[in-house]
Image 1 (cartoon, rainbow, N blue to C red):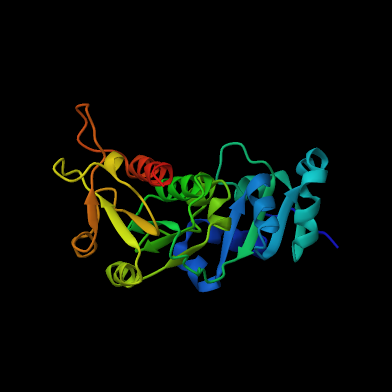
Image 2: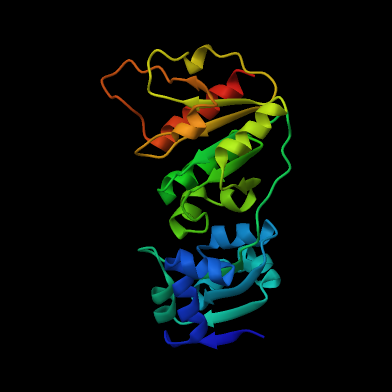
Length: 260
């Protein structure tokens, strides 16, 4: 049975709004918020537990076929007014489809011959989402996150276009130790650096398992991590001294996949 919600003061609506803006609340509730037909449907099709779906009549009329699987998998569904949709929306043009999903602990089995991305204290949600989207698009095996912004941040989810829901990943509090263990098992660990004297990324011959480390937007790869990595640089012939973190990650991942 579909519940109707017309008031922005409804408790379910207020909880969803809080999940959208508060990482601390998301962690406490073990839940997160998604907006948009594509993201919400991706969540349902990716096996994410959809605790509640909010949908407007206009969205149902427009995309009934697309939303069928989402509504079937959602534990609860609410038909909401346009006022509630505006309250829930984090975008300028809401589509009228929103979800609250269960946030489950993420972990992955590492393939010693796979290609992985390691993110060291990435703080911009849009950068994080773009990196994971690129990693999935290029066929990387998974991602390791340390000290990064919340992967359930709505901006990260929008930038990832569903990849954060699907990409195998794990989180660690000690990236240096994690990488050391992988190196001991035979994997190669690379870190990008602006040092022009470092070997060029484009000259590498890549074989076997490899992990590419991308550092914080302002400070780069932390010293503890950089000290154990094989350093490479992205050759640049222009006047710019550095690249945006997500662009550096995209170039690095592309080269690692191309060079295999």
